[in-house]
Amino acid sequence: MYSSVSKDKSRREAVSALFDEELSTQEAQLIQETIQADGKLKHFHNKIQVLNTGFQSFAPDDAAVKQAQDTVLEHVRRTIRVRPTQIPWWQQSLSLPAPLVAAATVVFVLSVGVFLSQSPLFEAHEIRSASSSLSEFDIGSRNVNVQVNIDSANTDQLLQWLNNQVDTQQVTIQLPDQALFQLRGEPVMLRPELDSESLRIIPMEDYEE
Amino acid sequence: MLNRRDEQAFFNDVYKSAFPVLFRVVLQILRDQETAEEVCHDAFIKLHQHSSTLPDVDQARYWVIRVGKNLAFNLAKRRGRERRAMERVYYEPQQPSRRADQDALEEETIAVVRDAVEKLPRSLRDVIVLKEYGNLPYGEIAKTLGISEGNVKVRVHRARERLTNLLEGVDVQFRE
Image 1 (cartoon, each protein chain N blue to C red):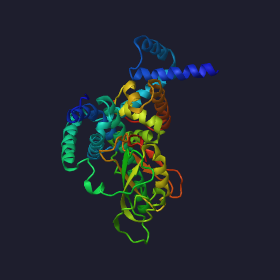
Image 2: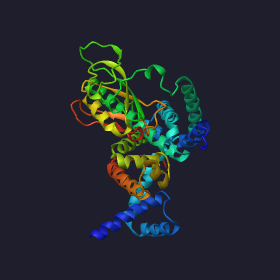
Image 3: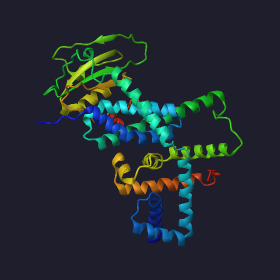
């Protein structure tokens, strides 16, 4: 019975692949003959056709795509002219040395958001002594730009530190051009629950809400 | 001595190659031309920001299609939440007025199909969207999503099975 179910399943997969023209000539011929002889397979093939008709009926035509392509390109060019991709100098001028600095291969500039409480808000440029440790630095509910020098081998400690900033609502990490490596994709940090101990960096191309 | 590539030419090549696919996918997810153009714009701005990390045109193309697809789905999900919130406030569904003709029936069926796609598990939804909306072959889908071609074939089939089951009992009306 298992082999019969499995055979049926692989035939249905083949019907789907036939529809997408992903079979070899020999395979296509074989499955077409099978479809003609098997009412259930024929029914499934028809259902895929109906579904595909639905998908195609709301697809844009080539002219509409071309027009959109030109419009968006113009918009992209305008945006690139207005919005430089480099980190402005005022975000690179602060320094909070951390004991994890070794080769200083990575520089993160953290722009920390504000926890909406009754705490006073102010923009502060924090400069600490070289002996300050990252773990001792508590952002609290302040709105502050922080530049952290950190060894690339110890980024997990940075994540742990960020996770410990329980009053922090939003963290933006910007990697300056002079960093010796890049983060692939645009990382998005998520905190599913405020009291959760887990913190993840997810590349933008895999991030979905 | 390393040859520095021409980033402008690189971007243009990726844009020309990826835009038609990305736009088709995003438009059919979001169902609105202007919003689809905005999402495509955002995806290509991100490409511009990260292009130096992408080794070649093909990898950049797969990357920007993935990013754009995710941006579109995220926006669609947010809009769904907002619409449901509005419905709760005003105690009636926010639906467009219905015309009693073939066009209306077809539009309704299209909406049902799209809703069904959005209800699929992500692993199946991503594949079927690139196949049916983007018209990509299995090989390209595999490279875009970072899975094997065999996996693509199985997931496309499973997505279709689920969609046809979901639409079972719905009076599907499409023009011949």
